Length: 129
Ligand SMILES: [Zn+2]
Image (cartoon, rainbow, N blue to C red; front, side, top):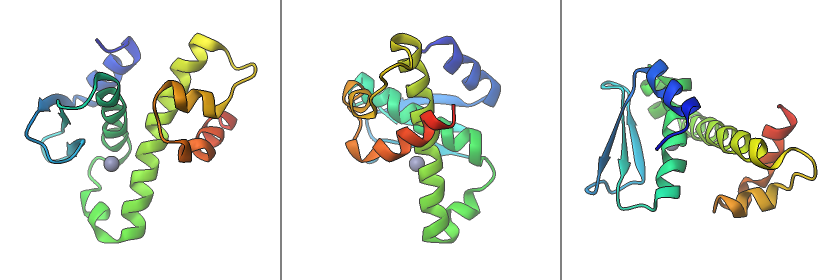
C-alpha cells in the first residue's frame, strides 16, 4: 500500500496510522499519542497526500504542539513546513518515475491533483534537491 520509504518513515517515527470516516478535517496528527488519523471518506490519492502532510508534522514538529497553538505566524509556518515535506516526498517519487529533465512544476501538480498555488514551493523543493 505504501512504498518502502514511507513505511520506513512510519516505522522510524513509530507513528500509528488510523482511518476514520467521522473526522471533520482531512487528517490530523495527535502528538500526545503519536497517531495520524486520516479521513477515510477522501479519495485514495488525497489520503496519501494527507498522510504525507501529517507525517511532516510528526517528523518535524513532534513535541511542538504548544508552539503550534502559540501564534498564527508559527501555526502558518508549521503548516507550510508540513506541506513542503509532503511535496518533497511526492516530487521525489515523481522524479524517480519521470527524471529531472524538463521538469514542470505545473505538470507535476496536475499529475498529483495538487493546488497550482504550490508551484513556488515545488520549485523551491526541486532547487534544494
Ligand atoms: Zn497540517
